[in-house]
Image 1: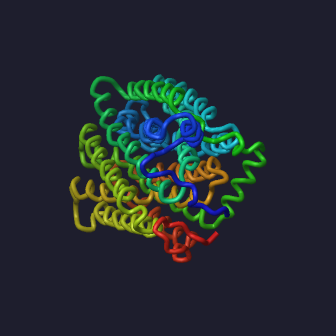
Image 2 (image 1 turned 135 degrees about the vertical axis):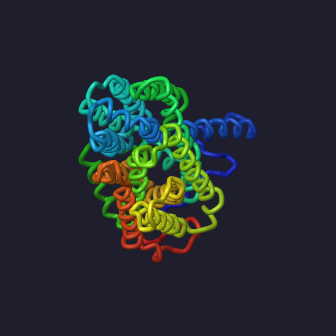
Image 3 (image 1 turned 120 degrees about the horizontal axis):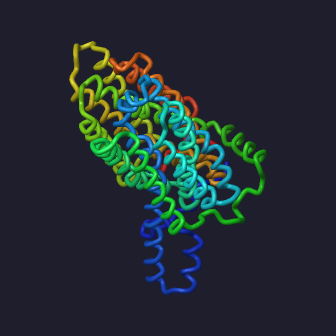
Length: 444
């Protein structure tokens, strides 16, 4: 594998577009050039944060409405959860297409096309009269929304490497982490004035605003000389070579299982909190927001305090361990071993589990992408696809025993946490890496 860690940006400059940096240094004094670069960097950061917010916005604004969708469309809870599964499946498969496209044609063109299709699909969801039609267009919504996810990660890989990349992923988590905090709150408030159809109307407006922002503010980050000229065959060959890298595959699968544990919470919590514990949609939205704050805070501790001081592998191992412990506690509580447990202890367990994702998600992404400077789009596609596919499988499993028990949710979370640790230890083998603070190993 190619060596990595050699290309980083100055901490004072922030995320810079290399082309604009070169031009400005030649034609403007140093201080004004640095000011322009910082301004550009902040704007690009906000745009990337908005793109990574597409999945939580598409999922979490809709969560408080799941019980209402079940009643409105005269369907079962498992079928209603398939609307989440369809969106996740679309996001997984879409990344496999968009990732290689962005390596061939650059980042902007596939991104803008994806956003336009996302707007169309979301608008149609707002008028879906049946569960089957809603599931179909949620699938299309996910396929199109995948562009924002995969290309945002690829842009980060274009601009950063090593410790700086891990820190930037934590910064993105802060920005995109606002989405799961406010999304269910917005969804709950929308339900006070309209029904679930209105949530998709709001998402359509969000898609339009993000498309305009990308069109005006996100420059191309992949230079023509760095693009791949081949077609589907070369894309498949590139992905095959990435999957042949045992360590990359280990981080990819571990991240996928960790995400599945998180999505088991996302898909089950509306029924667990509202149906089993009798909370209102507004209370559920508040608890979901509190849990999202935990993820954001831990993510910032990871990026601002731990990265550069502690090996990324060690931080990842700690995060996965906490995830397993939280899932074990949830299984004990929901199975009734100690009798009936109220909402507060269960909510506390979910808070710890979701907070652990602030250590798992950015570090699995960074550690995997450190090994793939030559094919960031394809690598990003594989990372996203594995996460969303495993999450899509986990989603219907949490409702397999009906709406009256939270045990399946806890079982799925515990299994996924243990599987993530197994992949991390069995494939990544972090003890074989050189003990450098940035977590970069030498086992290629």
